Length: 324
Image (cartoon, rainbow, N blue to C red; front, side, top):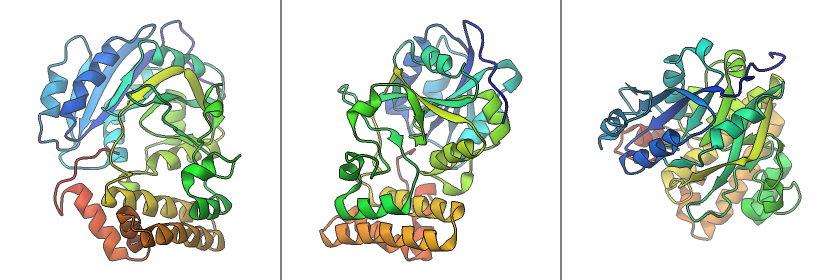
């Protein structure tokens, strides 16, 4: 790990990478919020498009007052792959940090400046903002490290309820935890600023996840390398959010990817226990009639179903509108 970051100037040099997939209905507002950023030098805005058919690229190319560069990935390549393509288009020698941003995000005018300020502290590799819903309410975005014990508690009482009781859940639900800045294990990938020192050290994002868990893997890898993921509530980002809680295909990918990530990072006994705990939770909710849980439970035990889910998302088995 690098000893520190080079974000020292009053106007840090920041590039932005936005991954789009049929994002035309939200992209213009996202770009407008970038245009309003203060206290930074916005050096580049790369829009990496995963084969949109709704004119997303045209909206990006028509944006005035921004250093826009559009890239067509040629397929629905997934979030991590498009991030890697977008980052490869940047000259890291000329920037201090890269902001990864979903197209359904809106930034307050000083958000990037405040995130960059958080990265000036040596050892901080990633800074994440306070994320709010369009109505201004808190959108829980901070996470604890995945653990067998947490998976068991979440299976029994549910993830949101577990997140409100001490550190029992992976999702941090207590609103008091979002009032003060501090380190976190990982956070949602919808909005995060990454120092170029950390980018060089960590290498590319893991494209094998396609969607979901790629930010978990990246943040945990950063922690393994000694970098701190820092939460900065003074930086505020509005996030509309997607369909992962209601779309059975997306919900199943969320569940199966987190089990796969845990397997890669832990030994067989812990991985089996984690898989069993997650399956228990999905099975109980499937019996209660939750359609997303039924799909996820089946995918946990069927490699063929998991392949079908990935084919659906990439468009090989029909279109699906969702970035992450």
